[in-house]
Length: 482
Image (cartoon, rainbow, N blue to C red; front, side, top):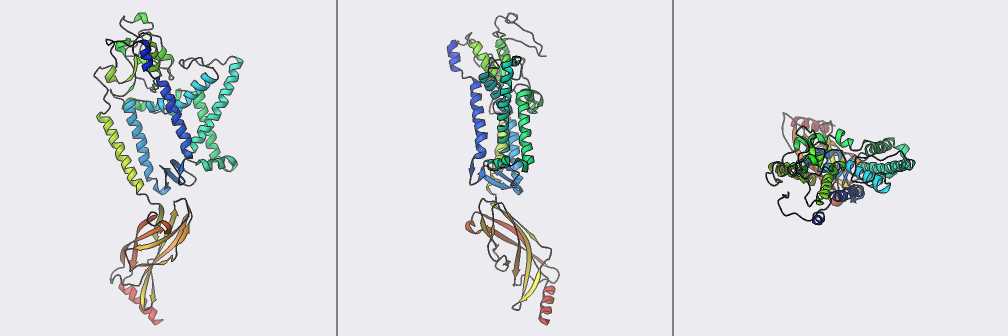
């Protein structure tokens, strides 16, 4: 914050040194919009950046595909999202609302670009308090055109939202056969109608009255949170602590107070608040009031009275804002830990899915070459989560006494298909000699793709039941009599 006792810059130097934050927001909005429109189309080996597919029941994240049985990773993503938003709020207030929120971006496009720049329904971008006059015939026609454009943009935005749940390559197939997909069509129309109502009619009332984020922010703010703040010590006290207005004209201020009461910071505000009242839930940190005051005060060779700063730096005059404070470091540590756990769990993901369950019959005993052959049967359900067909096979790990009877040959599984097989393990070796109970042996099975066994594999623990010695002897004696 620059003190007024310092050497003042010339008007041209103030404006030359200032980059309008409104333009920076436009750039951020453009790149955020471009990213969300383009990223659903980008795939690596058929995998998307982010896709929660209700069609294939798969979850794509960072170009890795997870089956629905692996959605244990989703809570970690939700924790990163919510804790990240809380951390951003503690650090920079409602930065997300003013710079990244789709609602704000839509309103900027609709109000500043379509209504103001294209159709001239609004006189100036800087005055957001005066609504367009639709009393004239030409303006009524313009309003119809604006609504039609809004419907087109809203339908595109709704489609983009659905692309994160229905991949674009399937989305258009659905769109061409809408009668066969009523839920899809209803979702698309529903989101489109909501967006049109929200952007054209509800406007910033969504931010003020509906969005729950504004209710959370007041709990998270502290004296070092960055936000738009009016400097009472330089501009003068416009409102008292009860938010009652004390000053309407510059003449009512003290001679040393710099506020011109021009109301530029008020007329430019999209949520219709007066930043000079202090912290308010409605403020979305768009910083347009900072731009407005900067341009006005530059005429008087003074820095802006509204700054993007903190209470510590502006009101309390306790020095610079503390960015690396314990609360921020705590949020950073929690996010880092969750992200690390997510990466470890994601990197250990198996590239195939297999369930092995023992069948109800404990075992079968047959006499083969004067030896007792004990068989255990299992049901296996195997799914190929890759994008191409693979041949799979199963081996017993580190156990040459128990072998596989069926399947005896590799079997083919297509992408995304679940295949059910019967697995039979057998042994002709004497694995136990107990007359009191059956013996349960723990063994490991390795299922793998023949063409990529080092990468696509899964290891499962199963139990092999070996019969009691008296049952085994009785079975062998009965077979001898036959």
